[in-house]
Image (cartoon, rainbow, N blue to C red; front, side, top):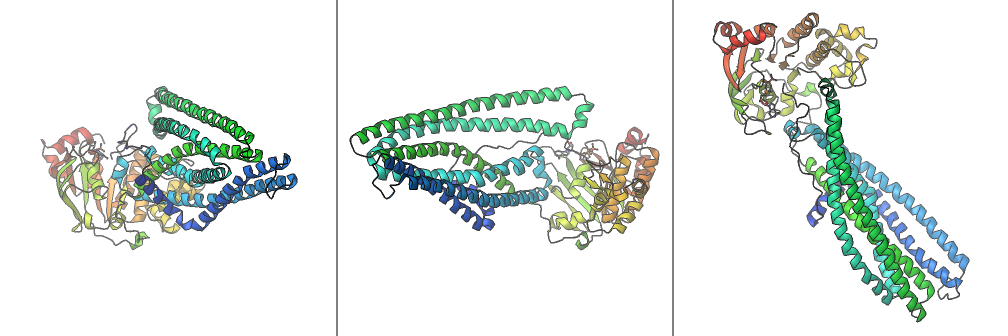
Length: 605
Ligand SMILES: Nc1ncnc2c1ncn2[C@@H]1O[C@H](COP(=O)(O)OP(=O)(O)OP(=O)(O)O)[C@@H](O)[C@H]1O
């Protein structure tokens, strides 16, 4: 079967960080539908956030009062130094308590909402058609559920809170200073537009650079993932150092960009510091002249300076937050894009295989034409017509790349045909429910992939509701029970990454047991090209024979023994059926392709 091999790359789709526009912001807000189920906690969290932001704003005021009462200029209700100091402690205490509850509630909302997003994304991944996966790299897709979701989580818990806090500080701060002294406030505010314009120019540059850093880092991760997945291939080709160099080069590029970004970020931060403190010095200077003229008193100047520092910090903070909101919006859009992808039309109401209506298994291909969605210009199948009646065994043979696996993929409706039609029991696959179709097909692939877990779980994958007795029976029929029993833990023996490694023949027999348990009307066998030792081969063959009984079987055949038993042989070449008939009919035609294939390919098997 055609596999997506090592080093194969899918078309990479753009991952631009979206500019914040009204539309992107509105689209981004749609992710908040995930917050809706937790809206009560969210609102309580927001309230605590507001309380903590507001109490903090009392701090400069009280410090001013403290200063006034110390210098004997006190005019307000607060005159006693001790009372004011207590008040300051009170403010900090409240601030601490409010912050705790703010974090507590926001964590509950964001953790739950993010788990919901992850669950929906994963459920989507499971239900998207194969063609979706062919256009993308696995690393790219997994980063949706990891990196992008983490960014959204950050946005929901930290960024949003910061945004809210900084904005409150800015607005309330400006109102308070205006109220304290209009003159001084206007003077102070005159220095700010300059700061803001410069911050925006800086911010934009940093944003593009951060995106570049992210992209380059993603490239390095793709190398890690691909090579780890295909570590055997890397080692077989002794390409370890080649890969290390490839990684090193890509990493070096990422580091270079990251450092440039960091330089800009550093410059940005020092600019904020210098600008901010420069501004404060100017304000103190002008404030001092106002105090000298008796326009305001000393305590007011102290609070004013503190408010100015708060306002300055929040403006600086908002600049940084802009970038974060932007990344979060980008991540949100990428997540929503996936959530809006069209799923395969499976019937989710059919919970158990036993509920799937059984077909008889009459298969007809009528002038089928097909090209893969990723390569629409290459026609892989042309005008394929054949029939497999219920219970018949049809062997598909032909050179590599002829289109054998494609014929099978179309039967499972991994893709839709572009011309002609495929019917099962006279019904077009496109009009058939996908769950019914696939529920009636069993497959024993060439390379059997077992999931991490016990042998029992792996066999039960064919029919999750099966009882232990049924699993054992299937294992026996598949000639698998003997070797399973020889393991100390029997059916509970773990396989896969952390378990025992089964041999090729054993894996195939587990796959056969899976298919027997599923008991499908239609069977697809993709014979292994690599030969097993003769004993194992015989066991597999026997098991296959049991499995094929009374089912319509389509076999991508590589062994003469299998082909001989077939009711019909289809010889495929260049995406077309070039010969069709029984072994006896085809092998007598000495000049035929089949006879030639027999000589070249099957003679020795
Ligand atoms: N997912 C895919 N996307 C694009 N092209 C594909 C895909 N799978 C297979 N092809 C192409 O379609 C053609 C037929 O491939 P297919 O896997 O059906 O051949 P095959 O006869 O099964 O070969 P083999 O015996 O080597 O497995 C090949 O040219 C292959 O490159």
